[in-house]
Image (cartoon, rainbow, N blue to C red; front, side, top):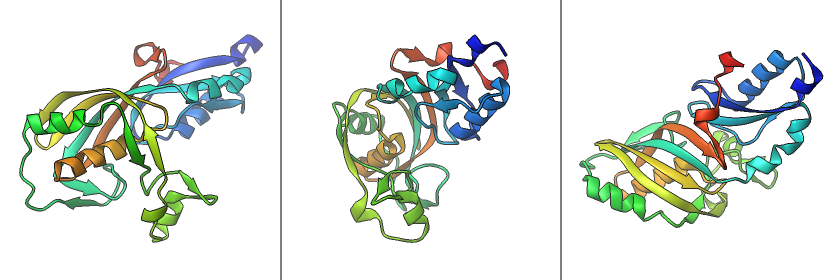
Length: 217
């Protein structure tokens, strides 16, 4: 491959079912170079915009990490998950009845402007050199040590609601956990909630419409 092609920023539409590192590995094979990285992980079940740097452009990736982002997410109400998403252990909220659309909308809008958000127990956040999810999987109680961060929610709107699923779009600061937002929505509504779908549609000025699928690279 010509040398000039070994220095690129790629916008990838990550499919569900693979990790962000799997995308990096695929690009390494395509470009036949180990010098590949990404700016901002997406969970395996999530889809959408992943910025990948190849060659010298890996040094530029840090410029993208702190940019604000937009997501489309679906939260399922009436149950909770220990990971705050569909991959965890689910528990019904019991007799929690359907919430009205007005109630869901009011709860969602209460997050606009931002709030102090706790990192999920099953996250890669490090505390005293250890990842939270590693401690949680060992059965350690991490509730008291979960980091809290002030996150900015500049825009949030309800796109669709049919109990028990609420789909919403959110524009937020870097480092915001959308599965925590889904969990916190359920807390505010008093019925529990967890994330069932997540798609990142924007990072800074870069949009999913400009991204390519892996098989198009």
